[in-house]
Amino acid sequence: MKRSSPALPALMLASVIACGAASAHADDIVADAKANVERLGATKTAWTGPASAPKVEPGKHIAYLSANEQNDGERQWGQALAEAAGKAGWKVTIIDGRGSPVSWLSGMNQAISLKVDGIVTSADARSLAAPIRQANELGIPVVGIHAAGTAGPQPELGLFTNIQQDPASIGRAQADWVIAHSGGKANVVVTTSGEYAIAMVKATAVKDRLEQCPDCKVVEFSNTPLVEAAQRQPQLVASWVQKYGLPLYITAIADYTLDFQVPALKAGGVDPSKVFLVGSDGTKSAYSRIRGGKEYQTVTVAEPNAYLGYQAVDELNRAFHKQEPSGTVPPPYLVTATNVDVQGGKDNTYVPDNNFAERYLELWGVK
Image (tube, rainbow, N blue to C red):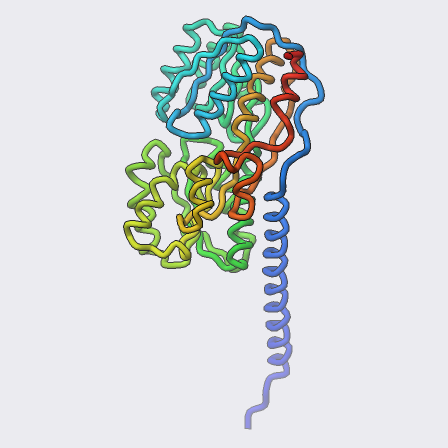
């Protein structure tokens, strides 16, 4: 008769303890994610912008180089910038970069040739190193919106400052929603677009946060050019469903890419309750899909587009007066079916309830 090894009970006990610890850790991750989702979806009423600003001087001429006017966010930044600049007595020229680094270079050179007083661009600053350097040498300050991987001054890129939410916080918000919604058990495709530094920061943050969830798995990290979304996303989303099965979560660095995934999912007869598209930016189409409830997209991390346009004018005004950037970084806002119609949602956009336009005009001395 064989005797049991005295080490076996100890090993079994250790295994049970380890499993219990892992389960507790997973539960903690889910609880933390749920708390974050609730906080990120709360109404934003606090003013987190600057407390003071130099008075604006009318008569300036500025240019806005949009990375791609086909994107709701890029277009709305320019519209808000033009509105704010008009109230300040400035002239604005809007240039469409058409989603291509080649067009961005042409557009930046065009802005410089116009001898403008300042430039705002949403194109990736790394692709514009030479013309931005030329603008700086000519005394033309350049402000970015989504033009770099992080918010704030970017002296190495020649940007007076870069305006955006913190992309890492956006990525973590997307991941937290996935963790909370799935109960900590999700297969996830993380998508990005490497020509934008902000996109890589955002997607990497999604991946890093999901890797903290024991039963969540990043099944693919997909990097494709944003300008090719219309051609590539339909085939890609169909292949992911076939390859990884259902349910499946897909995160996007821009709601724009989901515009081309949804029709492909519908055409393939994929159950909307089995594929969850997690967007960011807060475009009109994203709001519409979330409100509809059966359009695959269930959430987006929305940016306050009009706010960013006003902030761009404020930052240029500071540059004109040789002052430091404001340091303002708007917090992320998670839009779901429960809050889709508040804070501008009825107009399919995110507008914080903090009277930002009036506050900026007051700071600038504009009546």
